[in-house]
Image 1 (cartoon, helix red, strand yellow):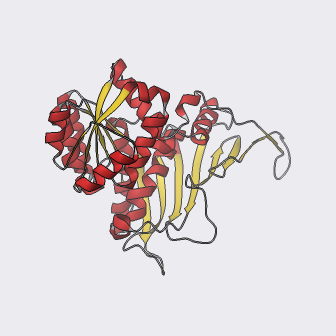
Image 2 (cartoon, helix red, strand yellow):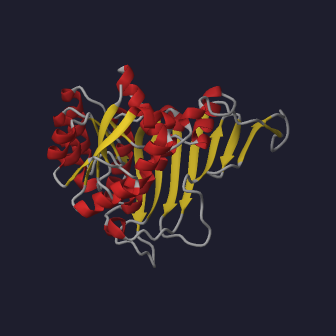
Image 3 (cartoon, helix red, strand yellow):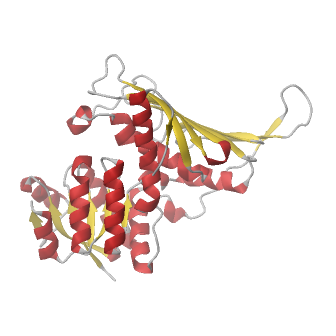
Length: 344
């Protein structure tokens, strides 16, 4: 089956989507982009020209373009504040919907979109592309293997200073809502644990070019007595971490360190005596399936496969709402200055 897709939201992020759709052999054979929608029609026209999308419907009215194009897929790349209305329109038209993160601007909106997707018998999944990278997949496999023993904690540092301009610099809770969700989702995925509670301190450091919330420290309680700690800033210049963060993951038998790029260091206890026991290195296994390590393309491929096979994709809203609940739990904790129970 070849799917007909409309992409809504033709700003800079849309280019990553179209690049994935055009560069993946699988997606080129499965998805035809038949429409583009943007509040500024000239922006949509420019995107169509850049990617050589000919004979497609371009407009500013999403329901009209969905009808005219006879689309069965909606790719939602709009700003978070517009997500609820866009996803609802796609589901009402009978489309399966793949959205940019975050899943919704509020938890109540996310719960409503879950209900709409269930009522429409359609998939609403989220582009959590950073769980579809080699390092995250390898770490999940190592943890599952038991080589580190029982998982006890995950710790990560995220320190970058990007100057985006545009809507991000005016957002509330910009780090937690727009970026940290990637890291929170990766922690959930790698650990296989559920978030239970959080304590968070959010602030806007001196010299920040963001209006609000460019930095945060958070302590999460996961199921099975596992801790996850996060230290992050989007206005920290001078010693960048990877976009994937720098990680230390501890188990009852050893520790894994990952720089968020190519460097892994994993050691387990080998000695039985001494004040500090001797350790020996272990190998971090390769990803179980290389097809799951291509970021954006892998997310879209798995979304299409789920539609075609009648299964639930890994980043379906029924799962992703847990990552969103971590974000809003952290925001609530920072606002109220207390530990907050997480409930999706």
